[in-house]
Amino acid sequence: LKVELLTKADLFVLPSYYENFGIAVAEAMAAGVAVAISDRIHIAENIQQAEAGWVGPLEVGAIANSIKSALLNPQERQRRGLNGKEYAKKHYNWEAIAQQTIDAYQEILSSIAEGRRNKQ
Image (cartoon, rainbow, N blue to C red; front, side):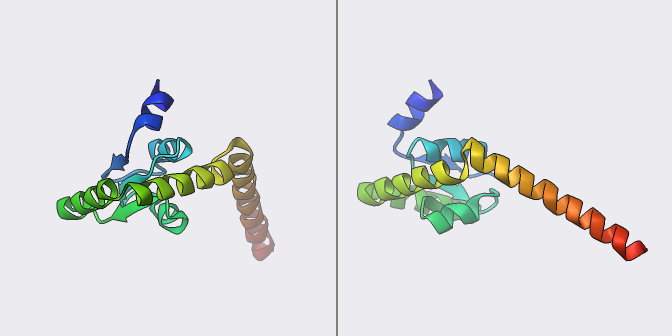
């Protein structure tokens, strides 16, 4: 039901004070829906780089302008939605997430090993 609703949406809006990742944003992107989010959501930089939506400060006027801009320009909204879908397919699939987890653990293990070497 969630996927069906997302695919019918014109825009996904999340003006949050804080999101450590923003899984709902990633789900909207995977469904091909452009997003309008606050800059306090962890993946805001990814959204900007991928041109997958609108990112602005957490201010009523800025959020309203993002929504207005998105809704008044259907072609741009569609373009950003497609960009988001491609980005999500590449970066948020299970294989990519597993590799990111492995990389994080390897970085932690390297830091521990380096710390041990420095103590000797």
